[in-house]
Length: 277
Image 1 (spheres, rainbow, N blue to C red):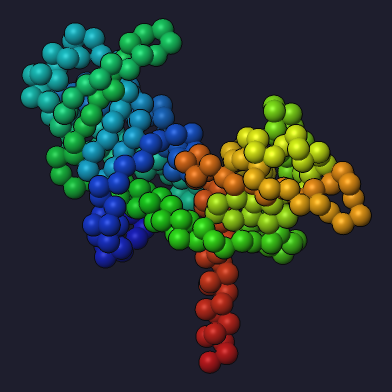
Image 2: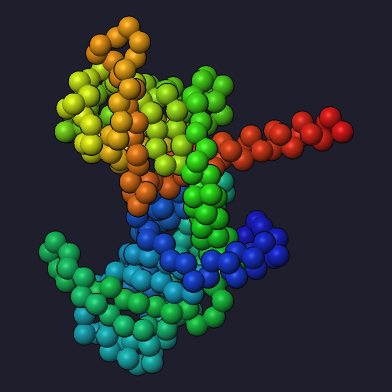
């Protein structure tokens, strides 16, 4: 069952019902999508599929169908159900539900050894509250992240702890070489790092910043470009590099880290104001 009140769920639906998000590795991890349990149900039979993208009114899935499958869809007059299952870290049991859908079309989707189909589905009714909450939280978080693009966060030990980062020691991947670096500050749009380097060999080059977060099983990689270099007083080999992130490739885990930290600051400020009054 959804944990948010009906009013908030209705706001999510009205605000984001037309927004679609691709279920890449980052989104699958954050939502706890149980990939092996996803399937389409056609006249009682279940066919395994991959959730490619989803909105509150439609979805796209990758499915391998034979002639029997197409005949079953035809007999069902294109009416099927999409089974979704999520097991987020905040719950003790998986959240599983079916969404009544209408098949709107197919495109051939080439996999390594076989041809599958990208099936477009249109939900035939308002989806379950659990899906509205899952997608609504993501879209709201992305929206807040974009609004906070100008805020730059300096990383001291207290800030690192609040953000859930083990330390400000990280790595920068440049020309496929993993270089140790120190994070000076971060923002929605970029970061500043300390790096031993010759700036003429790294300026305007592609870079991936590697972060380690306490809630992430794997390191978080953020792709960007080195846009500027500043000397460090007294050192000829150490520079502060300004990195501009590729906005289209910023992983959702990073967006969540920034948003959660700023939310904590705002909650602390509200508490102080309340105590002061």
